[in-house]
Length: 135
Image (cartoon, rainbow, N blue to C red):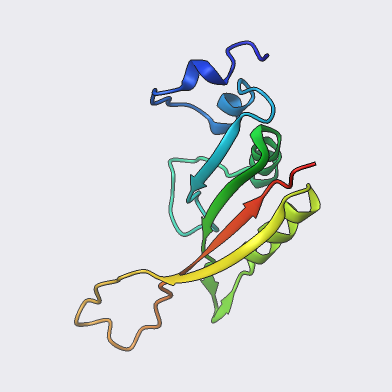
């Protein structure tokens, strides 16, 4: 069991760096994670960097065999070209052992300002359903 163990986090809201917090969780202890992390540079989080590979590795370690991670993500569009970050993330998740069980695309409800009629605004997100296979 880890220093604090997963049980010490049950029914609590914990503020902190997700990697530091997950390192305190026991291996194979989480049934379900649903998250919509920062993606590309679409938002500024006061200088926070997004260490995707470290987060993905910790998610794999703490997810129970048979457990699920729902990863909600989107890509920035730069000069008319989507970055493809979501696809690279899906491939990385597979490379560390997750199964890409399903990919869903959903449309966010966006209210358009009357002066932005001609702008192209991406309002689609991907939900990657990642499963840790039973051994």
